[in-house]
Image (cartoon, rainbow, N blue to C red; front, side, top):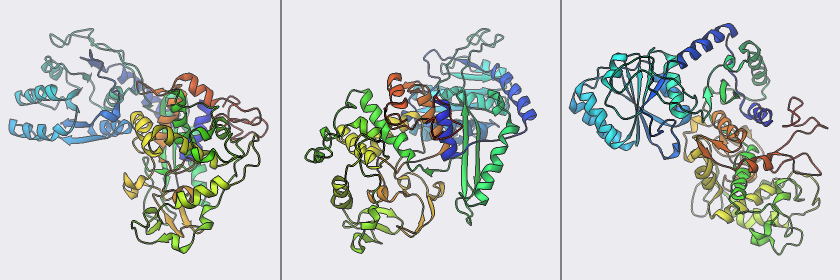
Length: 542
């Protein structure tokens, strides 16, 4: 029911598809599925695999003559940051000791071996040391001899007989739960690795495959290329990233264009975009859901219960949280805060008097939000209480509610409560504090109404920028893969990666129609059969 809705969001904000030849892909999928049946997981009695709680892990990937290292690490990095170590030249104890010292920074080590890897006494000693100090996982490709040499290893071993890219991709996805396993050894290899040995696992995260793996035709998806390229050519956008996920698998992921029309920075799959109003449904509303789930917030409580300054405002003190989420609070639809700026409010240099950075070489004076913007909102008129009128002020208010209850800033709360536990590595507010500028797509070619410059890494929305880059209606930055993770979690009714983030009833409540006067859910848009919005292609259940 929700699948079509969230697929639409991906198209609107992070186009995603990778079209190849249908016939070739069919053959590749058959080959991949055959390889999948040969992969066996051993020594998983402690349920180490699939990995759970990624935000608590510091993972190193160590390759010993493992020719598919780039494939393995490329897939693994889609789930969590992996630090790669090439150990091809390590031979003696001294070298192993030096490597072991480097690996002390990590609590999880994935060791990749192949038939070309010599299982020497020094390597065995190294493995034994790692088992004593870290969570060790061994990936072994194409060598039954080496499997017998690892008979005394207690840590999980993922073994597959054919040393190829399919095996490396499958192994990485098995470790993180993108693929479920149920295979067993088909013969005896050693005392502990006997015929019938093996462990089953569950699929707990998105997997990565081709359209044909979910019965889609890649040739049909090629039409996306022409649509996107036409949009770029007509200057609708200089760049697009498209990601399509179906049945728990990412089956299309493609980047188009450059960061700017005349620039040299080619768009990459993991580039980070300004999410604009998607902030509401990917940051603010999810945090309201979390507090509702924990019974720390009632939808029918007045906002004034949490935002004390509204208690003496006759037109606002009775507005309840439910009404704000439905955009039926009657707040003023939009306020152009930037039109109130004076020259004395701005500076090209940072200082204690001008600490709020809204762009490169553009700082706002201290307490501008508290002294100017917030009073303007509080004094704004409430004229349509009970009717559907979309207003950003609803989400300004929800941010205040969330921060009052949690005693945390919204950006910290959502990052630690949701994004990092989910494995959303590239999501959050204030991206220039965490990511290189080159990964962040500029939000406007030329902001000629407020900042009068190319804005890159700072929120495009003027109100959110002037409030310090963190607001309930705008300010979030993310990428296609992270959005896919978040909305797959909602499709899963609140669970992902072996963790429960919401009760299923909470997800159903917020994402189903809750208004008698509009088609909306609580914070979430719904399909309107009268106007065919948000899209004529959306399901009536969306």
